[in-house]
Length: 265
Image (cartoon, rainbow, N blue to C red):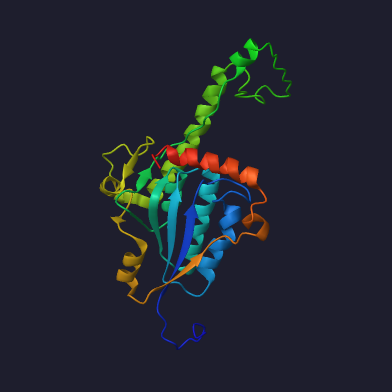
């Protein structure tokens, strides 16, 4: 009750934000700017935390949502003059590493998986199956690129070239973000931007992270044994808690498990 009195000697507080799961758009995405925007704002604006800690466990996802969340964190950090430290749990890969780079420091467990600085697009081709079944695909468009990469038609080399150009531009933005945030900490002699992943010790040698450790001992060492942790997360409605969207949640869960499985998790 005394935390609002200016002359009371209070223990320092660290605001903790968990960023866990696939990064995707919309209100149901576990990690999206729509879901987490208000949470991040509260973490920076409530009281005057000594630091904001990001607990990251994400295999990646939407580059746009990764950029939006990271930009929000940087803006608030600079406005409030509050340092941000990212703590990687199982994985901070692809978009998950994009989020980690929003922090001033990145700390990971020895077995954390870090990196995957690349961009991927996956689809399927079903035109042979349809032909065997005697099914004719009929598509009518206004605009010759409107049906680009239609999975029910043979792959068009021009469409592939366009897709690769788009992926290349997103990859370049990702690289620029990492270089801007990590600066001369990166090892210039190593190929860091080919989509590879590393465990924490090697990632530290490459300059992708700063240290190995865990949130509680690290924060106690910096701010004293009496440091307090104030945790922030998304408040789920009663309907969400009792599982009203069971099918959608199940599909999202399968997709997320597949994404984590790429890293043996």
